Image (cartoon, rainbow, N blue to C red; front, side, top):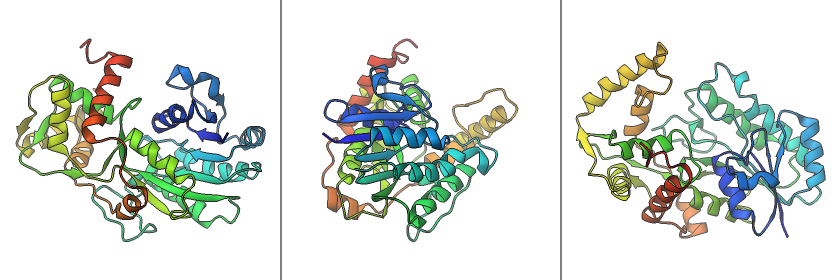
Length: 326
């Protein structure tokens, strides 16, 4: 039976990976945080990826066949690159520790779509355009992998786009909550298409990549293959909640609301206002990637947007009950 080690297995995508393999693989979640799914506690070991010696000892003892390196600092609040050492030094440590694994066949490294600002179409996978320290840290992490001669096995880098589904948190959990509460307002008649990804489709792709050779030593975007129409999806979510159709408002109305949100956040009135200029720009900017090669190789994904939305709302109601109590 394959042995799979997941760094960051207490995070969102990591939790879904643990859940995928829990019944048919030998798994170990290496994370400084406890699993968000308490069923996963027996498979968790508290290790900081910045502690190289502990990491090496853990890898050597477990001796995995495959590694998913999902551990990272993912917020955008860091004040400098050093704040994101988990994304740079952590990658170096992961590569060094992987040398202790005698049966290792492949490592999947998680990067981020934010190596390029939203709306920017990179010419190739070495073309970067970050707008924050988080994106810069992920670029450094990618280049550590690309330029390393010491990785003892095959590898692939994935850039998750906007992934959502069971066990998610901010910001996409907020998107669902805002729709449930009736607060979500759609910007006028704008047509917004984005490459989002349902998390169980993402884990399906990640599992496929373990034995795939086409994308060996390559970088790919991790997403559903078809774009999501934001207006249609928002209404699908609202319908599944049993709510009314999403309201449309002029774009300038949302712009004013976003500026107010910026001010509230800056002066400390609200740490996470419903809308800011950054979030509004992310909302209205199309986010489309060329996934044709990945789609051709992998084929159809298991979950449609309709099934994914229903499963996510069912999970929200079962596990968190926050929407039902508000």
